[in-house]
Length: 333
Image (cartoon, rainbow, N blue to C red; front, top):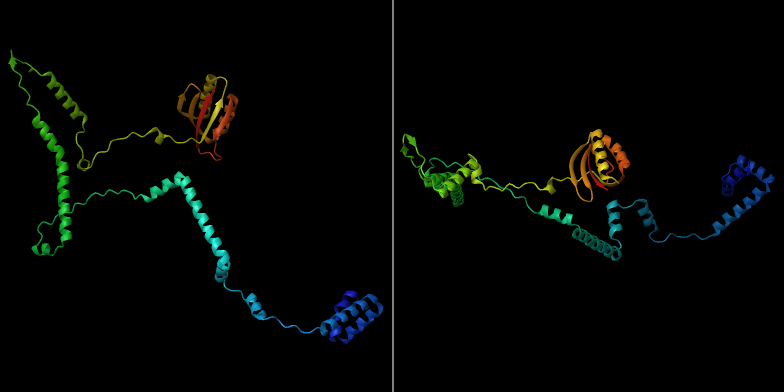
């Protein structure tokens, strides 16, 4: 038997629950091991001291606290307690946090014009122009049905009729104007017959100029317009501005060279060899700006060749390039 096994049986020996065989084996080991005898004596002294101590009662509420720890409250209740308890400490802190967040949002909104513009666009309702529907009038309504109609329906019918009348007047207005112009024009003078030939009548210079202007206007005007366009106001055609048609490039940079003409020839040869397309070129006193469209596979070789022509300094170069890369190249010499 080892010392560890003997010390494991000390508690059973002191309590008197150790069997006869185990007690004999333990006694045999204790007779030969002085260290285990001293350890057994210290163990018995400790047990005697503990038995002489007075019993201690548990404090009030100990059992309830143990049960609460064993059975915790539901998570919503624990969450509310963690957020709001204690009230005097957490409520002022939460109110201060809300005020700080609100002030920060207002500051960011005022210092960012893009947010203000998007808020204005969202708050503005879209303008929807609806074409009034023309409801056909009944051919022969009965007198009893007219009596039973409410006054709102009579007003709606009157508005519809007036709108139809206005639209008809708008459609007929160009025709009436053409008729009035035709009626106001003087009848062509009959040329007198002189010597078996028709002699052209004398034409006043001012009148001839007016007739020529009227003919030019009639030829420039469209032959016929649809009725729907006649009822709607014409909008002036506005040419798209250069700002609207211009799209930002994918890559832009500056090429510093010593000989600008040689660099321009080298760039032209490079564009032809790589299959690129030159869409625009602007020459100025301080340099030349070229806009190119290069395939993505040929872009690394294009950059290497630019480094041979001069010092290439890219100002804008994204991490991922599109299939067709738009490059704005400024050649400065």
